[in-house]
Length: 129
Image 1 (tube, one colour):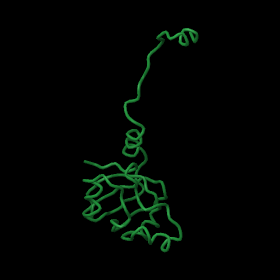
Image 2: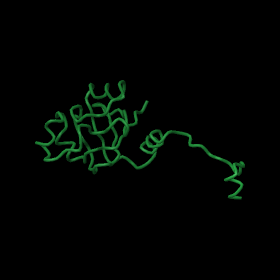
Image 3: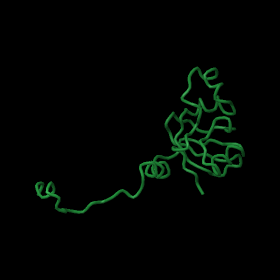
Image 4: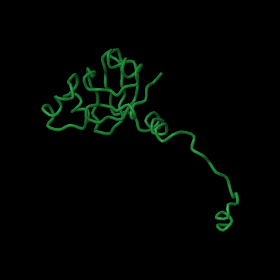
Protein backbone atom coordinates (compact mmCIF):
# COMPACT_ATOMS: atom_id res chain seq x y z
CA UNK A 1 0.00 0.00 0.00
CA UNK A 2 2.88 2.42 0.74
CA UNK A 3 4.26 1.84 -2.75
CA UNK A 4 0.86 2.69 -4.22
CA UNK A 5 0.88 5.95 -2.30
CA UNK A 6 4.40 6.79 -3.54
CA UNK A 7 3.25 6.00 -7.06
CA UNK A 8 0.58 8.69 -6.73
CA UNK A 9 -2.47 6.46 -6.36
CA UNK A 10 -5.29 7.85 -4.26
CA UNK A 11 -5.67 5.78 -1.11
CA UNK A 12 -7.92 6.62 1.80
CA UNK A 13 -9.62 9.88 2.70
CA UNK A 14 -7.93 13.21 3.28
CA UNK A 15 -9.41 15.47 5.96
CA UNK A 16 -8.55 19.14 5.62
CA UNK A 17 -8.55 21.45 8.65
CA UNK A 18 -11.69 23.51 9.06
CA UNK A 19 -9.92 26.62 10.27
CA UNK A 20 -6.58 28.37 10.32
CA UNK A 21 -4.25 27.78 13.29
CA UNK A 22 -5.19 31.25 14.62
CA UNK A 23 -8.90 30.47 14.34
CA UNK A 24 -8.36 27.15 16.13
CA UNK A 25 -6.49 28.96 18.91
CA UNK A 26 -9.34 31.42 19.32
CA UNK A 27 -11.87 28.57 19.52
CA UNK A 28 -9.74 27.02 22.27
CA UNK A 29 -9.73 30.34 24.17
CA UNK A 30 -13.54 30.39 24.05
CA UNK A 31 -14.21 26.74 24.84
CA UNK A 32 -11.06 25.72 26.67
CA UNK A 33 -10.05 26.46 30.22
CA UNK A 34 -12.38 28.37 32.54
CA UNK A 35 -11.39 32.01 33.05
CA UNK A 36 -9.15 32.68 36.02
CA UNK A 37 -10.53 36.14 36.62
CA UNK A 38 -12.02 39.29 35.15
CA UNK A 39 -10.40 42.40 33.72
CA UNK A 40 -12.61 45.50 33.69
CA UNK A 41 -11.82 48.13 31.06
CA UNK A 42 -12.81 51.72 30.36
CA UNK A 43 -14.89 52.90 27.39
CA UNK A 44 -11.86 53.82 25.28
CA UNK A 45 -10.32 50.37 25.68
CA UNK A 46 -13.69 48.74 25.01
CA UNK A 47 -14.00 50.67 21.76
CA UNK A 48 -10.44 49.74 20.73
CA UNK A 49 -11.03 46.05 21.45
CA UNK A 50 -14.55 45.79 20.02
CA UNK A 51 -14.45 48.15 17.03
CA UNK A 52 -10.78 48.30 15.99
CA UNK A 53 -9.89 44.73 17.07
CA UNK A 54 -6.87 46.09 18.93
CA UNK A 55 -4.83 44.45 21.64
CA UNK A 56 -5.82 45.27 25.22
CA UNK A 57 -3.39 47.73 26.77
CA UNK A 58 -3.02 48.07 30.55
CA UNK A 59 -3.74 51.80 30.14
CA UNK A 60 -7.42 50.94 29.61
CA UNK A 61 -7.75 48.58 32.57
CA UNK A 62 -9.65 49.98 35.54
CA UNK A 63 -9.85 46.87 37.78
CA UNK A 64 -8.69 43.26 37.96
CA UNK A 65 -10.63 40.59 39.88
CA UNK A 66 -9.47 37.06 40.58
CA UNK A 67 -6.11 35.45 41.07
CA UNK A 68 -4.49 34.13 37.90
CA UNK A 69 -1.03 33.57 36.51
CA UNK A 70 0.57 34.80 33.33
CA UNK A 71 -0.82 32.76 30.42
CA UNK A 72 -4.24 32.23 32.00
CA UNK A 73 -7.50 32.98 30.24
CA UNK A 74 -9.46 35.92 31.67
CA UNK A 75 -12.80 37.54 30.94
CA UNK A 76 -12.73 41.12 29.67
CA UNK A 77 -15.72 43.21 30.74
CA UNK A 78 -16.76 46.83 30.52
CA UNK A 79 -17.14 48.84 33.73
CA UNK A 80 -20.77 47.74 34.08
CA UNK A 81 -19.73 44.07 33.95
CA UNK A 82 -20.87 43.25 30.41
CA UNK A 83 -18.71 40.49 28.92
CA UNK A 84 -16.84 41.80 25.88
CA UNK A 85 -14.11 39.25 25.27
CA UNK A 86 -11.93 36.45 26.61
CA UNK A 87 -8.19 36.30 26.22
CA UNK A 88 -4.84 34.94 27.33
CA UNK A 89 -3.08 37.37 29.67
CA UNK A 90 0.55 38.31 29.32
CA UNK A 91 0.71 39.36 32.99
CA UNK A 92 -0.48 37.73 36.22
CA UNK A 93 -3.47 39.33 37.93
CA UNK A 94 -1.37 40.86 40.73
CA UNK A 95 0.93 42.48 38.15
CA UNK A 96 -1.95 43.68 35.97
CA UNK A 97 -3.49 45.35 39.01
CA UNK A 98 -0.23 47.26 39.56
CA UNK A 99 0.06 48.48 35.95
CA UNK A 100 -3.64 49.11 35.37
CA UNK A 101 -4.11 52.60 33.94
CA UNK A 102 -0.38 53.03 33.26
CA UNK A 103 1.58 53.53 30.04
CA UNK A 104 3.98 50.84 28.88
CA UNK A 105 7.06 52.94 29.62
CA UNK A 106 6.14 52.74 33.34
CA UNK A 107 5.98 48.92 33.57
CA UNK A 108 9.66 48.37 34.28
CA UNK A 109 9.68 50.95 37.06
CA UNK A 110 6.48 49.62 38.64
CA UNK A 111 7.10 45.88 38.27
CA UNK A 112 10.87 45.59 37.85
CA UNK A 113 10.26 43.60 34.63
CA UNK A 114 8.02 43.65 31.59
CA UNK A 115 6.51 41.15 29.15
CA UNK A 116 5.70 43.73 26.50
CA UNK A 117 3.30 46.61 26.16
CA UNK A 118 0.01 44.68 25.95
CA UNK A 119 -2.07 42.95 28.61
CA UNK A 120 -3.70 40.69 26.01
CA UNK A 121 -2.48 40.59 22.41
CA UNK A 122 -5.19 40.74 19.75
CA UNK A 123 -4.19 37.25 18.49
CA UNK A 124 -4.96 35.95 21.99
CA UNK A 125 -8.24 37.89 22.35
CA UNK A 126 -11.67 36.68 21.27
CA UNK A 127 -14.37 39.35 21.08
CA UNK A 128 -17.86 38.22 22.16
CA UNK A 129 -20.53 39.63 19.87
